[in-house]
Amino acid sequence: MSIELFDLHGKNALITGGTHGIGLAVGIALGRAGARVCVNDISDDKLEACRALYAQHDIQVYTLKFDVTSPGDVDRGIAQIERELAPVDILVNNAGIIKRVPLLEMTIEDFKQVLDIDLVAPLIVARRVVPSMIARGGGKIINMCSLLSVYARYSVSAYGAAKGGLKLLTQSMCCEWAKHGIQTNGIGPGYIATSQTAPIRVDGHPFNDLVMTRTPAGRWGQPEDLAGAALLLASRAGDYINGQIIYVDGGILANFGYVEGENRV
Image 1 (cartoon, rainbow, N blue to C red):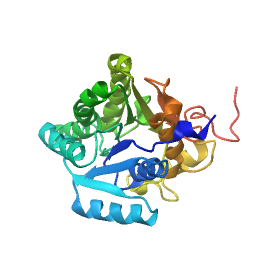
Image 2 (image 1 turned 90 degrees about the horizontal axis):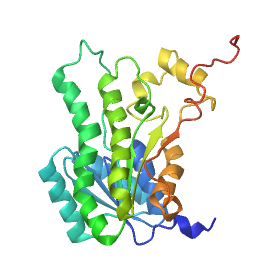
Image 3 (image 1 turned 120 degrees about the horizontal axis):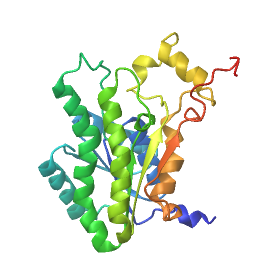
């Protein structure tokens, strides 16, 4: 396969919430492939730190502040990108939060906040960039899904509900927009070493033990492990991949119920 299939020179990529963790790793991968990278956040400090991190990789990044849950703010932000740079060719809906609270203890307000950021916001941003993609004959949308798009886990009900919905929203986007040359896919990260997982990623924590014993790769993933899937879905190499979720999980979905050394019937 020719390396030109992965060339993103001339493409304009927006990674929402891409100042750190998975979003940062994806943005750097797309930038190395030649894309012009735009990153948004609601924190000035995170945007400033993001610019410094990109500079360490000799990649220019365009940063701007807007709230992905506000249609008006999204419209303002995307209009700024279009005016100062170019229309968005590649959208990575990466912004997200998680709240680890059991259902009976979680407030409805907190539940709705997770849904707004993790499920509704990807639709808000996509609806703003897709008309331009249609007019130009194509585009790429990558929604950051999760292992919790396919199974539930204790205390993260809002996150699981949002990510399960995002999987089906991704497929719905494919059904409606594929005829316009737009590929809409998702990435389902496994358990990745980020700031979000730091509280449960310590030696002796039951969930850390579960990840280490159930993941065939025998380790937590790193944000950089998502770069290859993102590059595939953002480039011409993925032009006939549509409505799919690529799980980058070290094999845990294939092997979730197995513990090495257990007797199996």
